[in-house]
Amino acid sequence: MAVKDPTAVERANLLNMAKLSIKGLIESALSFGRTLDSDYPPLQQFFVVMEHCLKHGLKVRKSFLSYNKTIWGPLELVEKLYPEAEEIAASVRDLPGLKTPLGRARAWLRLALMQKKMADYLRCLIIQRDLLSEFYEYHALMMEEEGAVIVGLLVGLNVIDANLCVKGEDLDSQVGVIDFSMYLKNEDDIGGKERNVQIAAILDQKNYVEELNRQLNSTVSSLHTRVDSLEKSNTKLIEELAIAKNNIIKLQEENHQLRSENTLILMKTQHHLEVTKVDVEAELQTYRHSRQGLDEMYNEARRQLREESQLRQDIENELMVQVSMKHEIELAMKLLEKDIHEKQDTLIGLRQQLDEVKAINIEMYQKLQVSEDAMKEKNEIIGRLEDKTNQITATMKQLEQRLQQAEKSQVEAENEDKKFKQECMSKSENLQKEISHKEKQLVQLETDLKIEKEWRQTLEDDLQKEKETLSHLRVETQQIISLKKEFLKLQDKNRQLKKICHDQEEALQELACKLSESKLKIEDIKEANKALQGQVWLKDKEATHCKLCEKEFSLSKRKHHCRNCGEIFCNACSDNELPLPSSPKPVRVCDSCHAFLIQRCSSNMP
Image 1: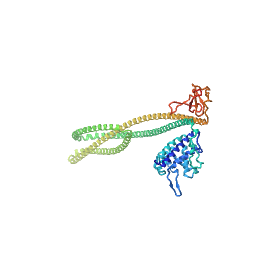
Image 2: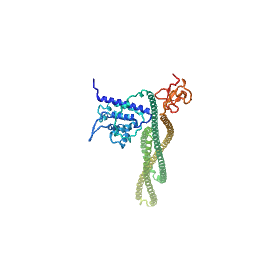
Image 3: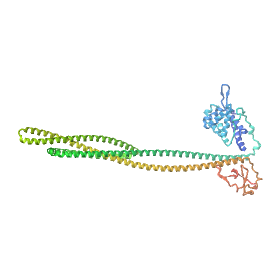
Image 4: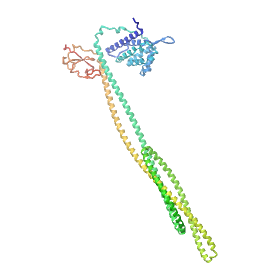
């Protein structure tokens, strides 16, 4: 005969004892029908069996004074593996009456049973076998498959409601002895099948109510998440609207500033142009008056100028050909620049256009400063021209005086021709020198006039550029108007979203009201079940009439018995039906306590 391993026999015995204690505890608790106290014998025996299961295969730890062998070490690991167990561990450490680690372990087991999470906590321990190997031997119950079976059996204890007072009990000095007399069969237990049926029905009711509560809690959590997401989206939309409003206000302020600057620039340029026009007209009038006297004196000089003008015309014709070539090249360059600008305008957005407007304003301001400097230089040139005209008038006066003197001298010369011939010849030579000098001054004046014409052309080009900038600004104002329209559209969308959010909040409030009503109904059902648990069924022989319609039971009117309150109804009166998730057909419900009805044979039926 093969010899069995004693540790395997111990594990099998402990597993069988755990099965018996858990089964007996569930059956006795459901027949008892109330929350269990700490004095309840099957509950005490269950804790004793669990201590023996947890102590099996524990390693002995040496200390300074003695050997230490307690369950509290592995149970403390649950706090690290399962965060929800931190409350139990903290409350066990804070209990004043506990001095030994065994007492703390017993208090921990009682609190875990009250929380209905003992199976979850021990399952976390069994999974982490590397950590358990520090406390248990390799052949211990918690390290083998029997431990997983016991954890699966502990799930059934979630049906039990326990109310244990841990604070006043002496858990340190309790003696853990298993009472086997509780698990022996009696003759009274043989006829307890009806009780098992009642217990199964009560378990079905309780499981159904718990499933309803879980579904309702899941729907409430999902609704809360939806509300949070909607609130976050609303806050984001509000922030985006505020940012868009601030941007639009900034753009409007910049537009106003640019318009005011442009008006100031236009006023200044117009004023400068008017002043220059008045000065040029005055200069032209003075020049015409002076030239009338000079034309008579310099006819001979004009003849020479005609010859030179013919030479200039030939040169100017050549220049015109070159200028026409330059104009063609400039037109081609302008066409290319226009194509490039059109392509760039399609790519560049509103922000780049604003930057370009700012850069153009800065350039305009710089050009204005340059134009002001140029105007100052022109004013200086005009002053120089005025000085030169004054010098010419002075020389003309001197010439007139000399002519008068010459006429006098001619009269005297007629009297004395021979004496003053040499003096007249010398004077004529001096006059020819002065005439040549004045011709040079005329050439300088003509060059000055050409320079003024070129300055006028540059000013006209600047005016055209300013007109182009004004057209660009008008286009940008149209774009700003389109942005305002888009902003109004966004405001309408925001209002619609606010309406949708408000409707959703109202729907959530309605759902919350319905959930609260359903919870109240469930609590009323629980109170009615608790109140009617102590009642006793009527016997079939005594129940001859229906309680509601007061008619006799027969083949057509069958009996339906309530499991809780014990009242008996007929088919016609018990019409209330409730759908069950486990059964395909609906179940009839009592009118008074809303419990399930059982169909029973009437006394008239064989």
